Length: 566
Image (cartoon, rainbow, N blue to C red; front, side, top):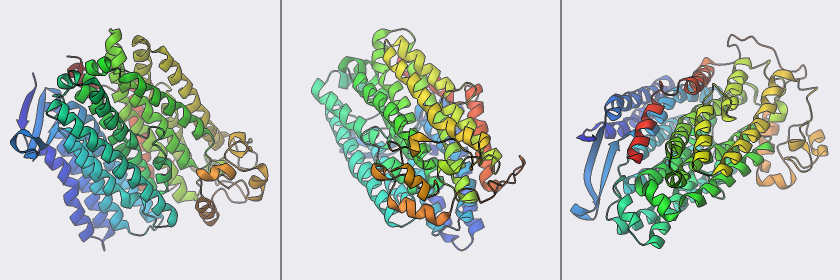
C-alpha cells in the first residue's frame, strides 16, 4: 500500500547544491574553501536523498508541491516526489558527485585551469537540475528541470572558450535545449489534452482510450525529445563533440547526469506515462527498439575507428545508453508474450543505469588522469602506458570488462537480464544484436588494455582500423609524418577537427625517447585526489556486478517492476 507523505526533503535535495553556488562564488579567492563547499554540498545532497530510501522501499512517497503551475486549480502543479524510480537516478547522481568533487579539484588544479570558480558553480547547478529531473512528479516539472540542466551544463561544455568549445556548446544547446526541450514540451501539452493530467502513473488508462494517432504522436514527441539527451541516432552528434569539455564534465555529466536524464525520461514515459499495456496496444515498443538496436550497433562500429580516447568513450556511451532504451522498448512485446519477460527487461534496463554510470565514469576518469599526468589523449600513443600508470590502467581494464559484459563486473548482470527478457518477449533478434554489440565492445576496448600492459610504444602492433586508409587516419603517410600522433584525417575531419590536431601538437603526448617510465603499484603515478576516486568507483563497479541487490539499486528496481506489473 503506497502512502503519500508531504515532506520538504525532495525540495531540499534539489536546493542543497543550488545554495552551495553562493558559497562557492563567495570563496573564489580561497580554492580550498571553494572546493570544500562542493564536497559538503555533495555529501549533504546524498545524505538527504539516502534518508528517504528506507521509507521509499517500504511504500512511502515523499512529496512537495508549490501548487498549480498551469491551468489554475485543475491544472498541472509544480511538484516533486521521491518514488522508487526517481530514487535510482537521484541516489546514483548524488553518490557519484561526491567522488567527482574530489577528482575535479585534482584535475582543475593539475592543469591549472582558468575560471575554476565558474566551473564548480556550474557543476553544482547541474546536480540540482539533475535531481530535479529525478524527483519530478509530472511531465511539466521534468520539462522545467530538463531545460535547466541544459542551461546549467552549457558553461561546462564551453569551458575552454576556444572556437571548438564554443561551437560544441552552441551545438549542445541547439540539440538539447531548443531541440529536445521543445519536443518534450509539445509532447507534454498533447498528453495533457488527451489525459487531463501529466502526473506520472495517472495517464496510462486515458491515453489507452484516446485517439490512437494522437496518442502515438505524443509518444513520438516525448521519446524523440528525451532521446536527444539519450544519444539516440541520428540525434547523437552533440555528445562526441561535447567531449571538448574538461574530463570531470565528460565523466559525471555525460556518463551520469545529462545522458541519464534522457534515458530516465524515456523510462518515465514508457513505464509511467503510457505503461506496458498502452505500449503494447499501440505497438510503440518495436519502432523504439529498432532505433535503439541500430544505435548500439552503429555507435560501436564508429567507436572502433576513434583514436582519441575520449571520443571512443563517447561513442561507447552512445551505444551503451541504447541498451537501456532497448530494454524499455521491449516492455510492450514482453506484455504480449507473457511470462517473466516483462520483469527481466525492466530489471535489465534499469540496472544498466547505475552499471553504466560506474563503469563509464571510471573510464572517463582514467582518460582524464592520463591526460593530466602524461598529456596523452590518443590510443596510438598509449602502448606500454601500463608501466607508467598501472593502477589507472588496471581500473580501466576492470571497467572495460564490465562494458563488454564480462561476469563479476557491473554490466554483466544487466545485460544478462536484457538477454533473457529479449528471448522471453519473443524478440530473439535483439538478443543476437546485444551479443554482437558485446563482441564489438571487446574489439574496441581490448586493444587499449592489451597495448597498455603487453606492448611497448616502439614495438606495438599495427592498428589498421585507426591507421588504415579506411580507418580513422588519412593514410599511413600521415601517420609517419606525424609520429603516429595525428587524430584523424581525410573524411575523419567530420569527427576530429584541425583544432584537435593543433592541440595535440601543443601538448606533446606519448612517452619520451626512453619509453614510458616504470612506477610501482603503490600509487606513485599521480595525485590521489584523482587516483583515489578512480579506484573507489572501479571497486563499486565490481560490487555492483557481484552483489547488485546489496547496493540498494536492484532492490529499488524490484519495487519499480512490481508497481509497473501490478
